[in-house]
Length: 303
Length: 138
Image (tube, rainbow over all chains, first blue to last red; front, side, top):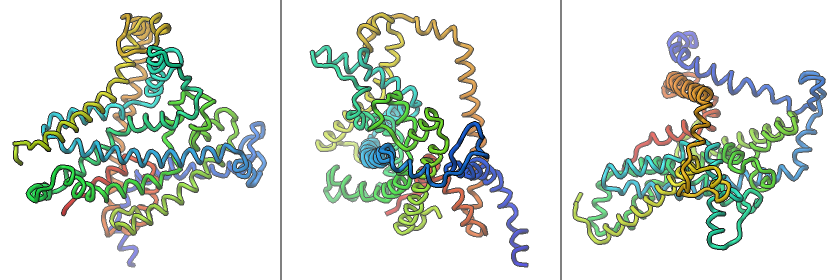
């Protein structure tokens, strides 16, 4: 009786969530059924259904190769690096933007700094080529003019963590600084005025008012980013190095590995296994991140 | 807010302006290199490489693009279509999904919230927007 009442009363809700849930079920949850491919040895002549099962073989092979350790290490380290540097730069530029006095300046700088965020990674890859190309690159041209030796950037894996960090910051700065700036602008102005009356200079105001009040946002964003630790920006790691093989040791992440294993080796079983591994760990991280968020500030938790 | 800037304030404003102009330049100059490269003559490009100042102006690249206008317009059409229709559809479906989740008296709230947010978690934009919805008070 109770449930019938509820259903009658709540049917508008069900109707409303229907399109969204339908989309999620078809587009996101449905394809999960394909996970069984990770446990098969796919033979194209037999097709997917008739290919033999090979249990955990794909996974054991995956974990025995060096590639897995490399790609996991790359993914995690890059994410940590990006989180730390990105947050720091975003806050710094956000504070700067919030301190501008003329509205025109704020809008101008915001728009210009946001510009790289709107470019696609393919374009950024070619901008990178314009800078880093061996004979035609801007940087090598510079080095040539000053009599220094040229650097073959696309064959020097050691330099790419810095290059990728630079490019990722360049691209993401506009977006993250706008987020922090809008948070700062929401801070009550009377706090700053009373601080000024107490004789606090600009730097002290930033240190004791702005940054502590930003802490909540920063913590939330950071924890969410940690939840996504096992995912990487595919465009960044695949397009920027222009798919150069020598750079794999420092630019291969789990996502690019899955893609390349699929495209180059056509080994669907292996790719599925890698994807499965990524999703499992990612899921665990999401659960952990959400639990932590729930402890830190319950209303921001997702479930 | 007082309009008279003390010396410390002036210095601070000067510093942030320098930094912001630097970041703005960093954002624009790579794009300029690309544009300048598209205008440079081919021989100079191969011999001397990309530079901020094109050494010889030649619109050969744009002439080449002119022959491919049909393909490019088609590509733009597809992009435009996906953007417009995609945004419109998501602007309809997402709030529809979100409203019942925001109601405390929705019975399946926890389950649906779990299912949707699990997917949402990987969609940065959506997430950051919901996060930035909280306001600050002292």
